Image (cartoon, rainbow, N blue to C red):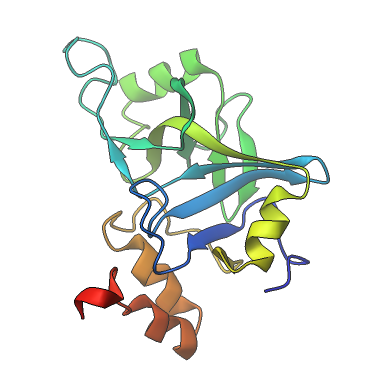
Amino acid sequence: MSTEYLRTGSLLLSEPFLQDPLFGRAVILVCHYDEDGAFGLILNKPASNPFQEDGVHPLSEFPFFAGGPVDANSMFFVHRIEGLPEAVPLCDGICWQGRYEDLLEAVKAKEFQPENCRLLIGYTGWEKGQLEGEIDREDWMLYNGSIAEILTTNPDSMWKDTLAKMGPYYKMVSNFPIDPSLN
């Protein structure tokens, strides 16, 4: 697959037979891409909430997702909160990050809800040329359609649902078994 269409705001979908627990059937939002490399967040792999035991932290009741294996002690967020200071617009009204203090204010104001935001721990990164090589090897399928629904799509079916939007061939791919030897 050509990488000429890879851009910030693209979705990467793992090839169907990848057996890795984190990257298998993963959907990654590319939050930054340039000639020096790429930064992305896995959107569909649940993770434990680091604030859950606290019980009083404003984020203790929210679901968290594993954004990737890099810097697993850092929190990131993808959202549709209009006007959140320092948020980075991606496309289709989807942004990532912003100031943490403003995120907490949005939680108090009930602007931050699971249906318009996703909290993530860690990230996925690629050095110069690495992601392009992985796409050329067909480790990833590239989706550049609308991402407006990524925060409301069920994480359990996100990989399959996104592939189905890509056309008949990819819809067929979305139905491949995880382990074909068990078929």
